[in-house]
Length: 214
Ligand SMILES: [Zn+2]
Image (tube, rainbow, N blue to C red):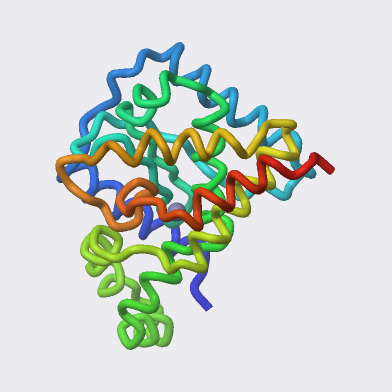
């Protein structure tokens, strides 16, 4: 019932608030950013035309350490610290971005917001005024985490996109092993590294990597 334009507005409000609290402009040079964007688009090029949700990749220097997250409306933020942690490995970074794209595809940020403020959302839909909903965005996206199911779905998306592009899901095992030792100064609920990856999650990627390509 919520129009896509509301997702965009929510994403903008969220990014502004996250930028104010935790982010600085990226220190990655333009060529490095371009290389990583191109590598991700190359992965997505293996998908059927029109099947990839609209998205926009932003780099930021952060106080949340190596991390990445997706916002409603399709903005995906990756921190410089994550790029450094994986030595700029484009395949690992594409795997993380593919996970975030899964959250975009399923509108997980909006789902969480709606669950956290159900009555307010209903009122917003009825009167067509989403300002009170927008006011809750920074708190909800900052403190809440996606459901286990949402994370599983995003992990599955990562495996699917990597495989379709001829890359091994093993890159995500590398990612979670590296990230396990890192913690930022602050935690952002919706971000990929803000909750330690459990055994089950790492096993999922390890088994996916062991399966033969279709
Ligand atoms: Zn996630």
